[in-house]
Length: 68
Image 1 (tube, rainbow, N blue to C red):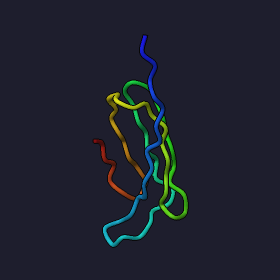
Image 2 (image 1 turned 90 degrees about the horizontal axis):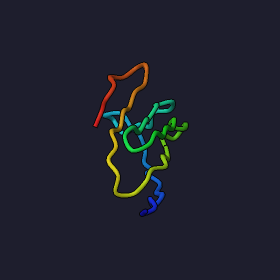
Image 3 (image 1 turned 90 degrees about the vertical axis):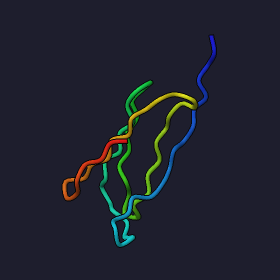
Image 4 (image 1 turned 45 degrees about the vertical axis):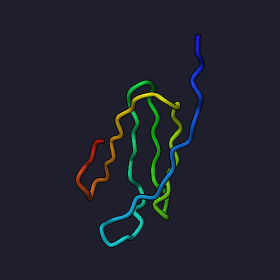
């Protein structure tokens, strides 16, 4: 049985003006479930497994939710 390789997915959530957004919920679902909340600088880090399929859901109460 092949073992999955753990990876980190990180980035920064910003608005259309480039300002960081704090408190954004980011959820990965699919092969496994992972979640994170952006910090005051808009930064986040999610753990996942390499070469697996996920859907990313992004939401914040003041913005429209997004899925990809």
